[in-house]
Structures are given as C-alpha cells and as structure tokens.
Length: 254
Image 1 (cartoon, rainbow, N blue to C red):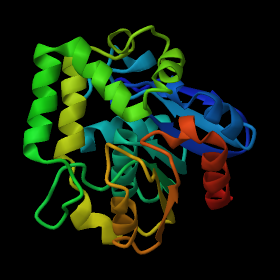
Image 2 (image 1 turned 180 degrees about the vertical axis):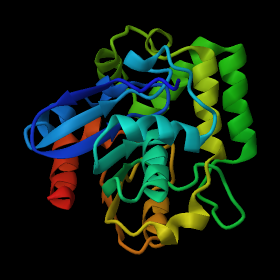
Image 3 (image 1 turned 30 degrees about the vertical axis):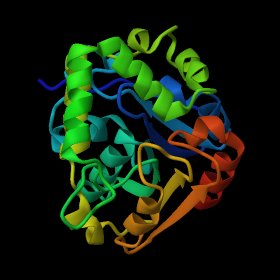
Image 4 (image 1 turned 120 degrees about the horizontal axis):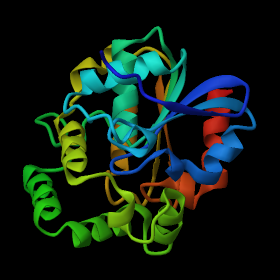
C-alpha cells in the first residue's frame, strides 16, 4: 500500500500548495508562508525523503513523485520553488483539473541544457556537483547554500531549516542524489503548450543557479504564462526580497 504524504496546513482562504526546493523542507518558506496564510489556506508539502516525510523514499521519477503529492492536497493553486517548481509544473501537466494556477519561483521547464534550451546546466557541472556530494559532502553543501542564498542570507535559511550548518539540515545523501536526478532528468519543454492554466515565472536578476532570461523564455512557450523579475534578488527571492515577492505573487493569485 502506497503511503500518503503528511501535509501541514496553515491559514484560511483559497487553497494554495507550497513546494520547497532541493535538499530543503517546507520550513524554508518561513515568514513568507506566515504572510500568505493570512489570505490563503496553505498546504505545506514536505517532499518524500524530506521533513516530516523523511521516512518515505524519494522516487527518481517525476511522475511517481506527483502521484504521491496529488492525493494529499485539494484542488488548488500551486507555488513551487526550484525543484518544487519543476514538480508543480509536472503536476499541472498530469492533473490539470487539480492545479488552478501556477507560481514557479526560481524554476524552469528544464534545469539541464537541451538542444533547443541553452539556459540549463551542462553535463560537466551536473556531474561535478554529484561527485562533490559523494566525495566532499560538507563543503559541497556549504558552497550550494552560499550560491543559493548569498553570503548574507545563508544563516537565515539555516535558521528556518533548524540547523547550524548545511549538512545538519538536509536529508540523507541518497535522497539528495535522487533529488538531483529528478532535477536534471526532468525536461518538460515538449509539453508546455498543453499547460493552459495561468502561470507566473518569478525569478531574480542575480540568480546564480538559473539564467534570469530563462523565465521570460519559458513563459513564452506557454499559452497563459507571464514572467516577472525582482531586481537584485537571487535564487530565493521569498527570503531576500519578501515584500516584493508577496506583492507580485499576491497580485497574480488574486
């Protein structure tokens, strides 16, 4: 029997599903979630292998991950950050009747470079990161946090995740490697024209993980999508530029 994910709920109003990024858990949304909960009934999902669902193995296939999440949440708007955005977009393609709107934060339809998509990560970088996790776990995670959150915000991210150092907050190595496989193997570009619900790609002009121009390009491949950039923000604008993040997402979700 397939185990159903536990999902934390917060607030009241229209339903909104929140999906965290690679190696994190739902606590990373922090005060942004508290603010959103004043307008929405949040469904804070910890992915399999993460947070309160740490005991459930993370599948290495997007479709299998979706089939674990969808039964655990009601029809709703979905907001996903980074890997969570890729998962939200995949859910919208597979279960359009369950996903009313999409907010894709620091996410693109393919994190890997493709013949028709030069915004993704190349194979050398992908293999280098995976090898770093295998052979220099602590240092690789410290560099990842620094790149993702910036030198002035890594401490805030760690506090939200409940640890003193990156290697204290993340799930086990096998879960991280499975998450990397999901992140880099997922290519939703061929199916974007089928994704007809309203969608917002939201990123930062200083994102060091995803090329900022990829958000506008991805939006142009979907019938009802738009893109917005937050000036000066990096990969996690809901932490570093929370007020602007809430203003933009609130206007879109209204």
